[in-house]
Image (tube, rainbow, N blue to C red; front, side, top):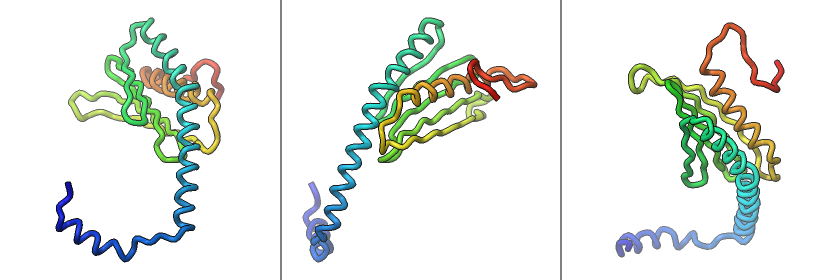
Length: 165
């Protein structure tokens, strides 16, 4: 419960400014309607594209005994893959009201805690229109490719199957 003296002080400051122009409220309503479209496009993309793709990759990793974890927090989904001296994480979230962001982190663990080096990538897609399901598959494959490429250092760049220079 708020302190009565605080409420009295606050109301004394705010009351002269409480009348809001109707056009300002209309703009707020329009913004909220657009936000609902973004949220709907995000939910459709997550449910129709991201979750099936994550499920597929998780099944493959489970079958081949690759240590991994899938977690959710708020509006984000994370896939973390643990390897002997490296780990990678793909975070998918609605980072802003009108976009979905794929953050790719590939971390090489140092000899001491805190000596980690990071290779990060971030890709952002506009949610004003529905996203095709191929975006989820491409982003997950990009993440898995970066993780696998960073395991082996060669003199010549190696491209994953299906990619050209």
